[in-house]
Image 1 (cartoon, rainbow, N blue to C red):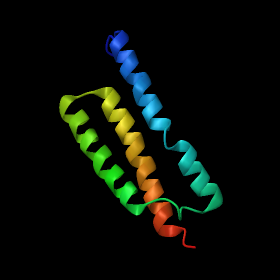
Image 2 (image 1 turned 180 degrees about the vertical axis):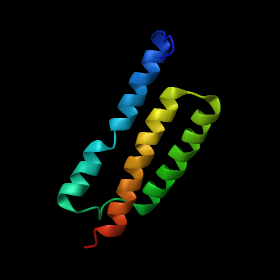
Image 3 (image 1 turned 90 degrees about the vertical axis):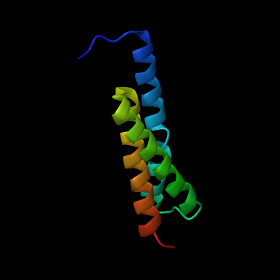
Image 4 (image 1 turned 60 degrees about the vertical axis):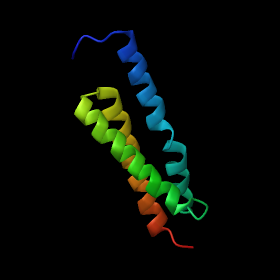
Length: 88
């Protein structure tokens, strides 16, 4: 592991917080099998957003951006799957 300074740790902590942002919603959607109130457009915009940030992080080789956006991309794809699968 590379030598990290305080700003690297701050970035990793921010990545952690960003990553867990969607966990409560994903868990609730999975438990209730209900995503009717979620906008498909919000999910699609989010997918575009995190995909762009992930590419940026990969090009810049920024570990915090790569980790956070990889996790958020996975959770967003899960929400899209739930949105398309859980019909009323």
